[in-house]
Length: 196
Image (cartoon, rainbow, N blue to C red; front, side):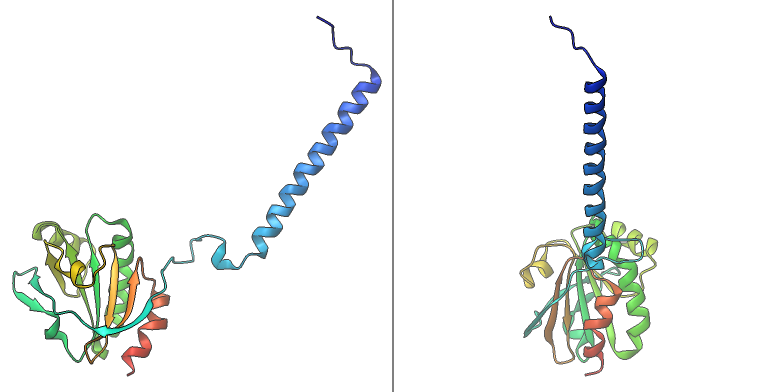
């Protein structure tokens, strides 16, 4: 097998090639940094100070008639909340995005309950004990209903969790979310309905 002989000329050539490869790699690195900082903040991915949220779809149809039980096993109905702005939130205790948005929903509810705003959180499928533990753990003060058979999911024709719907004071569904809701989106889209 022939031996590789490194002469001073070959050493110089190899050194130049390494320098060029290093410069090219560094150039690509700088281009990547420039592209990252040229993107709008919303496209850079989430940061610690940015809360992820879906944007609601504006809709216009009559609210479905949903009758379920609350955590005290009392019969409850959406009709009990006419003349309020109602956010129906379909969720489950095992759903990570549902858990993530609960503190946001609680904060918004506490801030706007005196304006005729109510959240009805409809848990899909778990036992009363599990849901009660969750409500206690997250210190939720808005109404929580139990839906063992998926009536609310079927009524809104959406089986994704979380999914939320805002019903105006006339009983019309005006906003539909599929996914996590941020406080920013609630303020932007629900606040105007509270003033109607």
